[in-house]
Amino acid sequence: MKRIDTCTHTDLLVGLLLAGIVSVLLAYRIFAYLCEVPAFRWWMILLGLLCAVLAIGGFLVARRAWKRLQYLRDNPEN
Image (cartoon, rainbow, N blue to C red; front, top):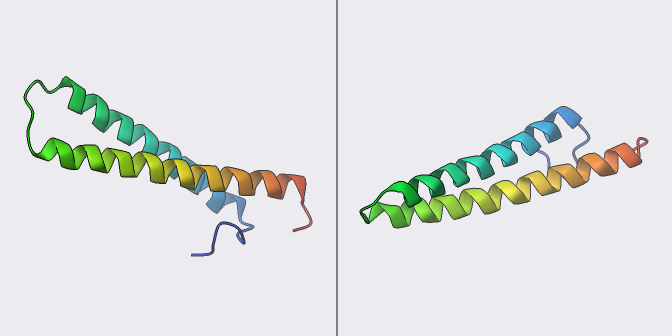
């Protein structure tokens, strides 16, 4: 797959933006589930780490895709 910085296909960038947003929402849902469970279990640590990775990764992908879309909008010749 092309790097986001060199990609000029807006469909791919919008897909990456949506994937990043969905990742952040999924991480929020996992975190909300962890808060609802009354008993602490060992796998909650793994789910918490997965939640953090999904949130951070989703945010970074969505942010880069958004910046690239804005750049392509402002510079249509590229």
